[in-house]
Image (cartoon, rainbow, N blue to C red; front, side, top):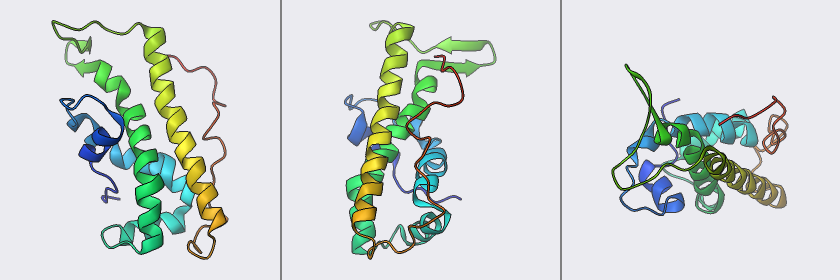
Amino acid sequence: MGIKIITAQTVRELVVTDISFDETYFDKYIELAQAKYLKPALGKEFYNNYLLQVHTLSAPYQILKDEYIDKLLSYYIVYEAFPEVRDKLTNQGVMHNRSEFTEQTPSFDYGQLRSTYNYNGNFWINEMIEYILENPTDYPLFGEDCSSENLNSNNKGFIIY
């Protein structure tokens, strides 16, 4: 793949309120979020065509990026990065990231906050699809290989945080 639609800085600016947050946590999750959430929603053909044009977007594609794609990817990227922000895998095992002056969020609150990022990503992906369906002539590649089903539900069992 190799093409990133959004930057880690944009993710931080759109979703994380702490301006001193280290946005490098997000870098490795950008392509994952694109492939895991955006590609199935747009469909393979539309997604690949979008990637080819990402640096010189047409007006309809720029609207998608500015109004929907940047927002949905930002929430999904934070959702995917969340466990690493809390815990760090080292050669000594899994360590909680802590500082002298903060307190870790209890597991329940952590799980709820992480779920909120997923929920918000789902919201924006559904808004994007609704917009595309309302403007079919602008997005002719949006077709049968697109799917937003299962984005809003957990059909794999329990989620444990």
